[in-house]
Length: 355
Image 1: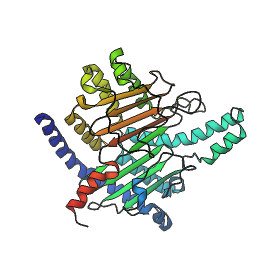
Image 2: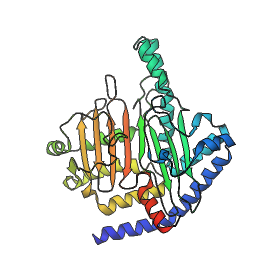
Image 3: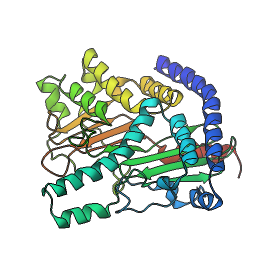
Image 4: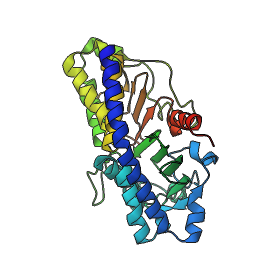
């Protein structure tokens, strides 16, 4: 226990020192981006920290859930370059490239259905509905909440189909949860992009881990229910799951725990290095013994399946169910308990800094 507390104290102290540089970079690239916008665009993108937009999220396409903010597709080339600097500052290279690929897959998805229509695999009614969903690389919306600065609390939101990025920054810390990443299709099967898999390791490491389990362990990890049609903490349900389900880390062999750690790292390492190290320090201080893993569905790809990784500090959810004849549609989310939309760090900020 003392060793874990010491580890957490040392690494969080270390990460606090690094945070100053990370925050400086975040503020700079965000202010630089604002300077590329017209007056009308600034009016569209700037919101108060009290706006309800800040704490709402959805992964639905724009045609089903219109967003407030500034449309990415309406940015100038200069603004897009500056905006990508924000993404590459708050994310690691893998997180940044996943975000870009998810946006690109929206264009591919539109093309896939147009091809299916041309080949008479879907009828006029279906293609008419598909077109109303407005799948498009440009149909993602960004919002800046508050005033980006070194002493103020502020936020950044970027959202659209299969993407919800929620950054909250205070004087002393920042958080990036909830972080939702999805991909439809999970693997592109037609067009020149055939083979593209934006969330490949989330799927591959999940299958790798569950198939290291022996029969008794699998029976304990696998829940006897239908594969959920969405993550359990979706926008229409409670945002935290209190019940621990499945197999506990303390019941795993060392080599199995190592693979489970790879899977958790895949989610944490989407964040820039300092934030990923902070999250890993919290995980290690608590210990892998306290992590639960639950699985539902098939142990083979392209068939519906779901998993949850759950500790007292984090929830990771993943599902792949699809809507046609196979499972080729991924939803995933990473959450830090108590810090969705910066709940904990904003409370601390308000207590320490009078407003």
